[in-house]
Length: 575
Ligand SMILES: *[C@@H]1O[C@H](CO)[C@@H](O)[C@H](O)[C@H]1NC(C)=O
Ligand SMILES: *[C@@H]1O[C@H](CO)[C@@H](O)[C@H](O)[C@H]1NC(C)=O
Ligand SMILES: *[C@@H]1O[C@H](CO)[C@@H](O)[C@H](O)[C@H]1NC(C)=O
Ligand SMILES: *[C@@H]1O[C@H](CO)[C@@H](O)[C@H](O)[C@H]1NC(C)=O
Ligand SMILES: *[C@@H]1O[C@H](CO)[C@@H](O)[C@H](O)[C@H]1NC(C)=O
Ligand SMILES: *[C@@H]1O[C@H](CO)[C@@H](O)[C@H](O)[C@H]1NC(C)=O
Ligand SMILES: *[C@@H]1O[C@H](CO)[C@@H](O)[C@H](O)[C@H]1NC(C)=O
Ligand SMILES: *[C@@H]1O[C@H](CO)[C@@H](O)[C@H](O)[C@H]1NC(C)=O
Ligand SMILES: *[C@@H]1O[C@H](CO)[C@@H](O)[C@H](O)[C@H]1NC(C)=O
Ligand SMILES: CC(=O)N[C@H]1CO[C@H](CO)[C@@H](O)[C@@H]1O
Figure (cartoon, helix red, strand yellow):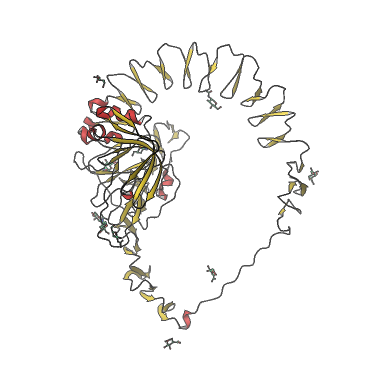
């Protein structure tokens, strides 16, 4: 997704990079591997509702070092707030337009380690996927060596062979020489300094305590066989005793009765009843729990709502889905508020509204004007083309000075000129557009360094001129950005991916509930389910997530409709 029309000023983009790209595998709220540095910036706002000595609303503001900022859940960089999908924080300084999720720090500047290197606090453009730093320079490990030391300075040498290694400022062939110290110099292998140094001591195994093989210690001074015996340990004396068969221990000895456990206590179910971790005396017939209170199903005028037992309840009362006791003939419950019944009214959040002349968007009601739809919590008229809804955030295109047909979304952000949107399932990131760079999932690599297969990066190790450019395959776009002529006037395929597998260079897909749709003609045809579908070039297609529902447009676009409660309705209402 690239936009090149110049309608808004291009702001600063700071070029960035660091040693090596290796920040994989971190668990994070985004579900995909992101930079290890991002972790420190998740939800950093204090939870105590106090910011700089004043109370604040955590649902509206973020507090950074005592300074409140508009917007909830932002990250802090010093006393400034930022969104970690749009900027990075290094040593308290912000770098804009580089997401913290993919960046590393080079001193106080952030950089993208995929395309850049940080050598001795300098950001260099990466010239090779495996490039590393050699002092202030970068070198390519496959073909070069970085010799010398920090004190005397480092230098880059072209490897004479793959067996060459550094020895001081020089290189040597480790098949014929070794590197001797004092002075550092390569010597032939038969030289005395090449002999291996002091031999290695074998560690003496710490032998296990004096239990027989197969036995385990039981408290102090005893052993037991865990497959046939039990061990009870006196909690005061720590003396252990072995008992035959499986036994539950009560205070260091086998329990005298059939025990059950209630929270951390053991109890006799003949005498007690356990409700939500609390013991009560057992009363015949009371065999249900309402929270911590036992009660009987036949008890009169008793109702258990939300684990609270209400007694003396008048006939006709019910529990609302939220756990409130109410009288359906007279009242309605909207979330946690009980309202008097008003014919024709429905709930909107905690309030009631009249769907005839109001619209309820995500719990907020608005006066209905013409054919309105919801965008997040706001209402708007899509048909005027003046507003654009990006994943629940509404933009006024007139205010942005942008023609309707140019408006494209990157997740919840309206894209500006000169930016590129790279998407992985669940994460959309904006990058300043650079020529020779192509999206790979949510990353934006230099295509002469990295190739991309189905959203996975591969270093281009050999200087391979024939495959310099990635063949751009179909792109994942939000449904709202598909062109009407493609979406409505051609036959599109709609279906849920069940499984994906590889077949040579092809990707084969098993789809469920597949349909072919040509909206302009009102044609919707159910296809066999499961449907077997083959994509010609695996690598050029974006990653497809099993369980997600996609629409495939013949002109080469794909859209993930999993967030749409009725994908077919979403398509038809665009046409
Ligand atoms: C950060 O920006 C993204 C869009 O780029 C948005 O979806 C997300 O909600 C924002 N996060 C916060 C905490 O505001
Ligand atoms: C890196 O590449 C960019 C774009 O080609 C260029 O503007 C910049 O000067 C380069 N930086 C360095 C340190 O070479
Ligand atoms: C992209 O990679 C190539 C190949 O190493 C390099 O020559 C070029 O400078 C890089 N471009 C940028 C902007 O870093
Ligand atoms: C090491 O081997 C070379 C050739 O095999 C020989 O000329 C040289 O004398 C040997 N040096 C020592 C110290 O044994
Ligand atoms: C001993 O041997 C182990 C493994 O062979 C090696 O990792 C270790 O460095 C050696 N220790 C010494 C002092 O040579
Ligand atoms: C546990 O040990 C203490 C101290 O030796 C002793 O008084 C107590 O009787 C022991 N309890 C059992 C159940 O044997
Ligand atoms: C239901 O119980 C939970 C836990 O006790 C409580 O937080 C919540 O407010 C209750 N809901 C209602 C509607 O009473
Ligand atoms: C609302 O939508 C209907 C059906 O598409 C259309 O006939 C009608 O003219 C629209 N009304 C307004 C006010 O846009
Ligand atoms: C170079 O790229 C072409 C086309 O992708 C490929 O067939 C070939 O195997 C590559 N050569 C090397 C040495 O990687
Ligand atoms: C090209 C681009 O995306 N530039 C953006 C950099 O960040 C600033 C501030 O967030 C935006 O205003 C620019 O549009």
